[in-house]
Image 1 (cartoon, rainbow, N blue to C red):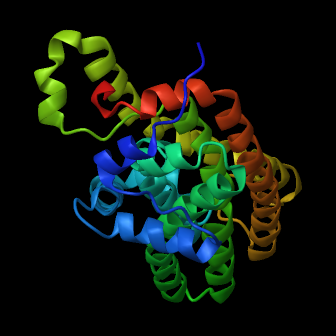
Image 2: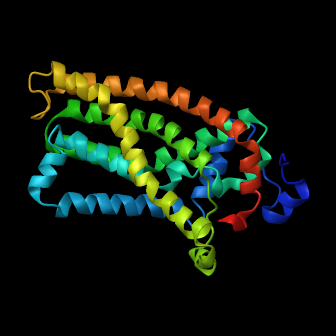
Image 3: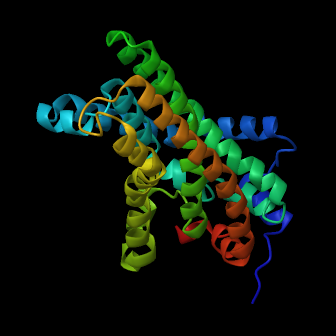
Length: 283
């Protein structure tokens, strides 16, 4: 039996009248207002991930760090840090935290596209500047300005493709950001309330790095086959630049495909999404 969107009265009762963006500027403002207000869940998540990654860099044994960042230290650290900061629910659960507006726009693909793009853009605005500063500092310390440029391009472009694909996971498996206390109170109904939620919270830590790695496969192949140093030592700057350019091209293609398929996926799963997102008590 087909589901219908919640009535305007239901929307008003839940959170007030949802304001849908009429252009990209409004979409960015709305998403920024959501992110930069209590409970600041996106900011806390990103900061925590940065702290975990940085701690690993400083406290892991030197041999392990050298293996992880052997290709080009100043680029690799900043890029891996960027990937890790994206690796959490803000990159995947794009519908649940904004359920009311998503429901109001469920039959408006143009509006949905704006909203999805705004979410990835605001997340990028939080992560990318911080990682770019790290890359520039590392590049200056290494006295290698070309690496700074390549770092900026890679950190600035590649995540957009990754985020456009990781959004599919949140469309397939959204969840409501309900308090943990409430989830625990429903622990007898543990499969949907605790098990499903735990899996969806942990999945981004594997999914986002996996996607990033897949995007880099063509680049790694090119480096391995064409670079005189192969992948065993630090790459020459020119080889590094060509590889980053290729990865950016792959990311731009994924960006276009990712957003188009996201809208198709939402349309295909419309009734299930409406039924789930309309009831925040489903967790």
